[in-house]
Image 1 (cartoon, rainbow, N blue to C red):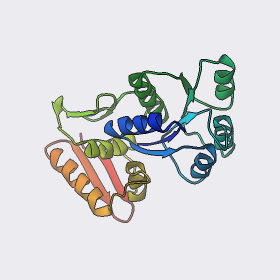
Image 2 (image 1 turned 60 degrees about the vertical axis):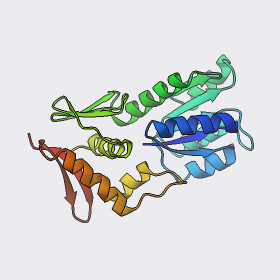
Image 3 (image 1 turned 120 degrees about the vertical axis):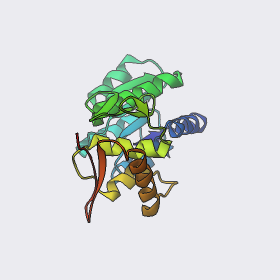
Length: 222
C-alpha cells in the first residue's frame, strides 16, 4: 500500500516515513503544498497524511484541489493544535479523519490502518479467501490457522492480491503499490515474490494464477 506524507517538519516527516516503511508500506514525502499538489495530480496513493500548515500552498488548498479532481483517496489531516474550526473546515473539504499534534505514533498508525481498510477492504482488518487469512493490523498471514511466515514484501504482495481476489491485477498496478519514488522493484523481483508465495501456498486450496498478457489473480479452489 502506498502512503503520501505531506509535512514540512523534516524531523517529524522522516520519523513518520521510517515508521510506516517498517510497517510494510511504500511511503513518499513532500515538504510543501505546491509539490504535493503537483504529485497528487498524476500519482495515485492509498492514503494521504496531510499537514495543514504548509509553505507555498496550504493543506486546505491541497485538499480542496485533490477533491476537485474527483479523487476519493482517504486523507488524514494533521493539525498543529486542537482548533475546532480547522477540523471542521478540513472535514468539510473532504478529509476523512484528523489528528492533532503532538500525537502518539501508535495512534497515527492505527488511524492509517483504519482508513486504508475503509478504502480497500470495507473496514475489516482481516482479509479472508478460503482458509487463507491476512491480519492487516498485525501483519501476519495464516492458512488453516497455521502461520505462513511471510516477509514484509511477500505480505504486501499477498494483500494486494487478496483485496482483488477473483479479479485480475496487472503487473503495473502491483508495482505502483509496492514502490515509492526512491525505490524501484523490477519485474523479475516481483516474479520472485510471487514464486515464494506460491511455494508457501503449495499445499493449500489457494492458487495464484498468471493470466498471460493481463496479470495475476488469486483464487480459492475450495
